[in-house]
Image (cartoon, rainbow, N blue to C red):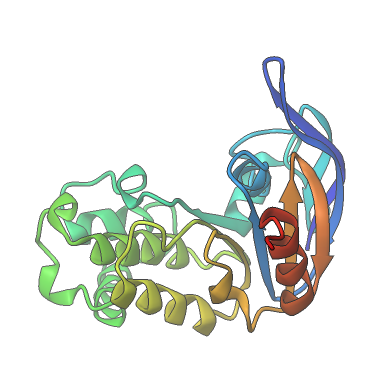
Length: 228
């Protein structure tokens, strides 16, 4: 569970989030809103990529301000642009980098690596330069590099924005198969129809918080002007 307790955040003089209080307990939660609504900032607060200016964020009782390293083992974060996460030269090296701090033996790491490469359709690209993969393959590698550490919660920030239709649904199939709690920030509201909960942000505040059908309907009514 991620808990926001009267959280506000600002960048300099610009207020991005104001007095957010939420308990995120459902297994599948979508976060939507217009550009500048604060949704990406909210996502980054979940695992301490940024810290709140006021208030407190905690994950299973551990605050991001005091227990950051613990929180980051529990909450994985997948960026919109996988190039921000891919740091090693080859596909196998990048995925292996996530296993560097585990207690697995070398043979166990190699077996784990081979299993995950095959699971995500990357086994034939094992020694391929990671940054030369297709957009969909890069995103799958970025997701695998987070999931291989077995976090309890995974936050996805616009995971399908840069993808074509085929790869968009490939990524969403991966997300729907996860046993972890998942938070997905997205502009593509149609991806959230089977989620448990959708939170709508507007100008840094919670505008709606309901089932997907009700929250998305409220969002659409709010952002699309009525026309005669």
